[in-house]
Image 1 (cartoon, one colour):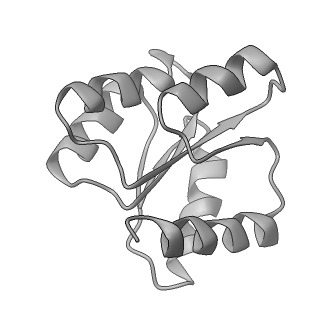
Image 2 (cartoon, rainbow, N blue to C red; image 1 turned 45 degrees about the vertical axis):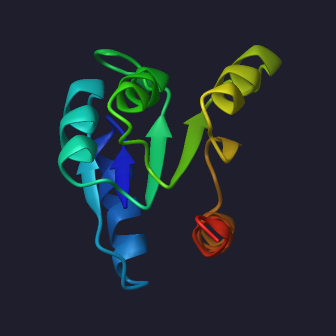
Length: 120
């Protein structure tokens, strides 16, 4: 899975959380790095912070779509609960849009649901 989050503490915590469930986890903090990593190794699950230093996290999905390299499941993480943001995320194929901070148990439960339903 790929975690796209520019806050080092948050990305490190999420990495540990998901690695403890046996997942292989990569973390990046920019749109450019996410596109590079996901293009080289298509993730099953990508958690995307929408506010990144080099642009909106949804740019990642736009670029990966051009290359036909979208993740199996993409989930947007945002601090803004706005209908326009949710609509754009959905239009770009996000399975869900979660308002930060997301409780860890909830995130783990939802990740299992997304991954068990992805591609089936």
